[in-house]
Image 1 (cartoon, rainbow, N blue to C red):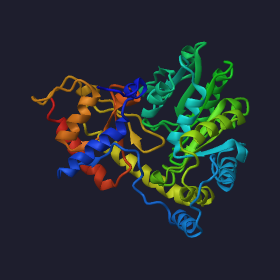
Image 2: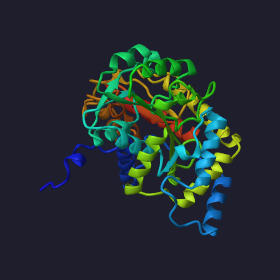
Image 3: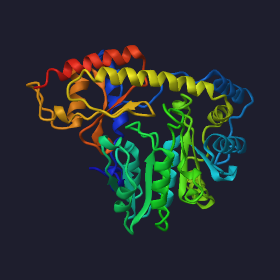
Image 4: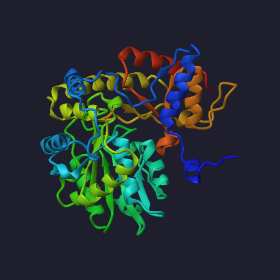
Length: 397
């Protein structure tokens, strides 16, 4: 008998974490699997950040923290947002959470009622849609295209908005496409949003430090739209701190109070040790993150160059993050004699079993003819992965 709630039965497993789990299961059986499914930098956390965490332990900073985070960290985040993003959030307008994922979930659960529509420009990060469903909202996809660099236009946004639309969630740089909205593009979207009363935006900026051309622009940096924007960020991607689990929001006071209330009932404050490490990250020199970004750029160019030799695999040139999101429609309907490829999910399973390379289906991101490849790995791993993928795809007829 299944006594689980309807809520959990409706919830899908994270596609990225599911593929990582399958990779681990194969590795446990002795299979040499290359995991390009998870969005995790392969760098170690910088020493200055680790030193701050060690000092926190030595200083016995191991008790409960205030629910929204230590005042010192909230002040450091406020300073960082002013310095780097031209965002004027007071420390009291910052909430620190156990990862940016929890930060987004707090906002969604605080703002979305049953039947509210939430717009998700596609491709979207896998967890957005499940968070909306958990809040009993109605996710509504706003399609983009490879030809338009996976970015929606103001006209597309306007056409998608109804009297039930409550929230828009998007990321720039985007996971999974690596697309980056320019300042002019963000302003144009903001001019649409501001015309609709009670319409708000979650701007997910977790890949802010990994941009290859130009500079990152925050939607909330435009004064006319700031009070409608919840800015989400964290330390996992730019500072190689995925396991430390620290994310945060900057938002209007009333949203902050709601998120503090919900976090107080679910998890309370984030890890004290991690908060002290994050404080060091907020104050550290930019050279460390820039060095990691430069390595990601080299890897991006390597991967794009190698993929050109694989027939039928087309992609944009991502300007940020560490993913390539190629179209694989060329392979749909093909077979190796034992398995027919009917979907991107089929192709990912075929490549996992045949090439022993783990990727993520585009279906999880709202784009059923694409797959996501992470290049947060060494150049040698990238080369070996493409060799394996190419050889497996060549067997399909």
